[in-house]
Image (cartoon, rainbow, N blue to C red; front, side, top):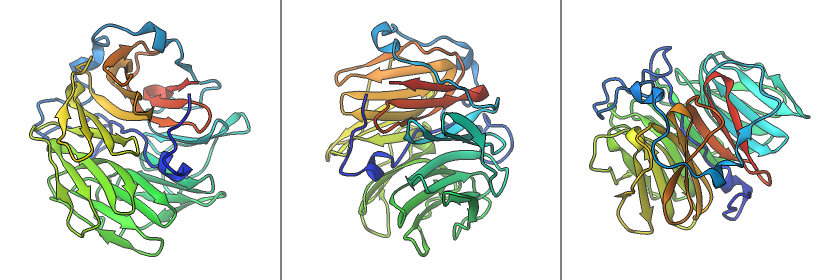
Length: 338
């Protein structure tokens, strides 16, 4: 497998999947409560079910448990890889696990708050976002705190960028901010919206998705364009091909698709499980992961359910340059695909 390079490694690494975590308290599966999207949250009855639909065994054969496993039993919500030997994973309680030299180690962070997403411009410039306005940056030696201007007790669910001087961060209470290498600019949305995922396509084009069917687009203006989906559902993750095609996944197996200037449309899904993350290597090789070990695959024509080597809930997915993909999930789960 290979990554879809959209002009540079930085774009290919600009987003990974989404996770199921808590917007306020310590329960990582409580954050959907009260969102009014018709779901009781990622740890509802669906988690005990099996994956819906027919299983594509031919595609499934490539997925396996990553070895060696990280020495943590924490629920993992974030993953970032720069190579097969340079991987970061994190999650509940703030464990920062680093894979390098064929072994895992724990890199002390500036705080022990929950980690919800990683992004990095390079192996020596890595960002993470987490609970209670917690953002940190790795310089190759240590993690240091980053103060996000305008963030007040929000959980920062998403961080992504195009370079070390063009980074987006987003989270609860409509928090959206952009770093230009010197200062932050706020693009705050309504306080009753939580933003779960960001996909920056270029310096003047970025998408944000979240609760209540929220889809907002940055087009270079100080005001984001409203492309909200007309359905009260949590949208957990967005990924783009780099050629104007986008996929969004979310609660109850929701899958949305957009091509060019066309409208967002719902696509038949092989599952009703909560989908937390979406990622692809090309327009005809896209994956989504979710509750109860849900793995689904798009081959350019349709989405198909795929058997996973675990029934643990899967929270995030990312590409590994030159070495396939990684998925992380509950109880320290790490899966790999060549």
